[in-house]
Length: 146
Image 1 (tube, helix red, strand yellow):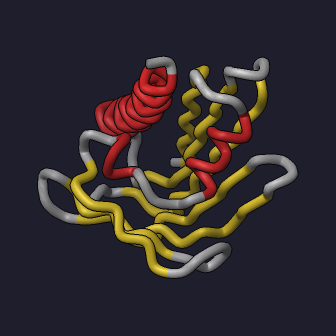
Image 2 (tube, rainbow, N blue to C red):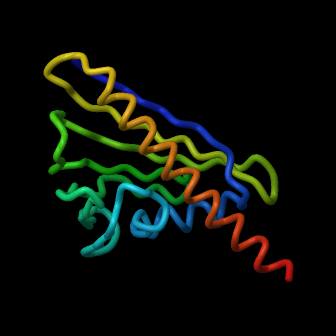
């Protein structure tokens, strides 16, 4: 069964700042509560990031897309501790105004059978991570105002 999950949120940062954070490939251990370590190897397309999970286990991503003009990032999750296959993620950043942007994080994967709990878990993990990124930008904004 093909599953698609999309989470869209606004970020308290310009599209350029938001894109720079996503394009850097790392940082997920700061944004996602379920990720304990984010270990990046290489740069650009073909780079990998190993995401060590707080509860044990890990996920391994391979960067497939880095489009600076469109502010789009894509990855293939080649190893993960969940019962899914062919997991691909795309992150897109668009400007709302000079100080705010929108992030659209979409994942597509195949499950052997329908599993609402797993889909809800993945949706919540994405939401938590995006909110973690937003909090990081908010803290930076407040720090810059002092």
